[in-house]
Amino acid sequence: MSRDFLALPGSEVYRAGTTPHNSSVAQQPIAVAQPQRPEDVAEVVQWAAESGVGIAVQASGHGAGAAIDEDRVLIDTSAMTQLSIDPDAGIAHVGVGMTWSALNAQAEKFGLMGLAGSSPSVSIAGYTFGGGVGWLNRPYGMASNRLLRVDYVDGQGRRRRASDDADDPVDREALWAFRGGGGVGVATSVSIELVAPPELWAGFHLWHIDALKPVVAAWSTAMDRVGDALSTSISVLHTPPDAPLPPPLRGVPVVHLAFASPMGAEAASPLTNALRVAPPPAFTSTWAPADAARLAQIHLDPPDPVPALGLGRWLNVGAAGVAIEMLSCATALDSPVKMIEVRNVQHPGSGRRGALTSVPGAYLLHAVGLAADDHSRAATDDLLARIQSTAAPVDIGMAAAPFAEGRVEIPDGLPMEALQRLAAIRAAVDPQARILPTRLMGGATGA
Image (tube, rainbow, N blue to C red; front, side):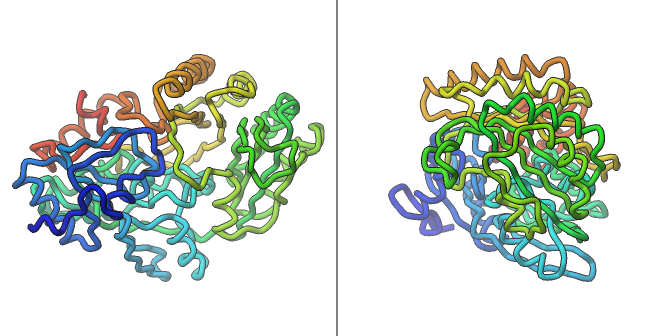
C-alpha cells in the first residue's frame, strides 16, 4: 500500500481525524487513514501489519479516552456513511461512520427509528457496541440488542462477517463481543433492527438551582408511577454564559429535567402531575409531539468538542430516593463537574446473546466535568470519586463504561466471566493485539 493513502501531520484530513468530540487526550498518530469502503480498511490494516504499526479507530470521537501516539495509524471511519433501509423488514444496513441523526432523518420517512442516544452526533457503531442507552430504551431495550450483523476486518486485514449463524465460531463469538462488549477488529458496517414508535413525544424543563430539592422530590415520587414508556433524565447542568436561555439561567447551575416517550402524551401524566407541587419551571420546551431531530435536542448536549472526564454507574431501584444527595454534589458555581444526571432506564425484557444486551440496573448515574489540563482533570476526578462514594449505597457494582468519558479502560464494566470471554475473542480476532482496545475491551486485557 502506498503511503499516499495516508494523511500525514499538517494535512486537513489529519487535523480533522485527530480532533475528537472528547478532546481531553492528545492524538498524534503517525498518520490518519480515512477509508470509504471495507476494502480500504482491510488495506490499511494489512499495511499496518507489514509495517509493524499499531491501529486506533474512531468516528465521531465521543468515546476517545486513550492517547494515540506515533506508534499507531488512526483509522477515521467518519466517511463510511453508506445507508440502506429495508422498511418492510425494519432493518437498516449502515456504514460505521454514520451518526444517529443522519440515520433517523431517513428512517423516520418510513415511520421507523433507531435506538439513538441523547447526542445526535454520536456514531451508530461505537454507541451500539457499548450497549446503547437512549430515550427509547425503556419500551424497546438497549441498542446492542437490536444488532443483527457486523462486517469487520480482523487484525490480519481479512474481511469477516459477525453473525449468529456464521460458519466460523470466531465470527459468532465476535457478534457476542459487538453486542455491548465494545467489539473486536475494525467494524465497517452494521445491520440493525429499527423500531416504529406509535406516537413520539418529548420535552424538557429548566429551573434555577434553588428549586433542586422540590423538583427532585416530585420526580422521585413519579418514578414509582410511570410505566415502561417514559424515559427521564433529572440533572444539575452548568449552562454556558452564551446559552440561548433567559439571562438568569446563563452561566449558572440549573435543574434540568428532560423526558420522552414513544407512546404518546399520557405516558408523562404521572410525572407532570407530581411536578404540580414543585415551583414552576423558569424555562420550558413544551411536552409535545416530536420528531427525531427534536428528540435529539432535549438533553442539551454540547455541540462542540469538549475535554471531558466522566463517570457512569448502574444503580438499583433505590436510586430515586438518594438522587438529591448525588445531584447536590455538583451545585456549586465553581464545580468542576458540569453535568450530573440520574436516568430511569429499567427495561423488563431479556436480551439477545451478547456481552451486554439487557439494562443491568433500574437507574443510570452519569456525571461529567472538564479535563482541559492536569489541574482541571484532577479536580474533576476528585469530585467524581465523591459522587461515586455518595452513590455507593445504591450502586450495583458495575460501571456504565460508555458514560465514563476520557478513560482508557473501565475494569468493572462487565462481570469477570464476560471480560475473560472478551479477552479470548480479541486474541482470536487480533492475536498480535495491533488494534487499540475500546474502553470495555481495555478492561478485558487484564482479565
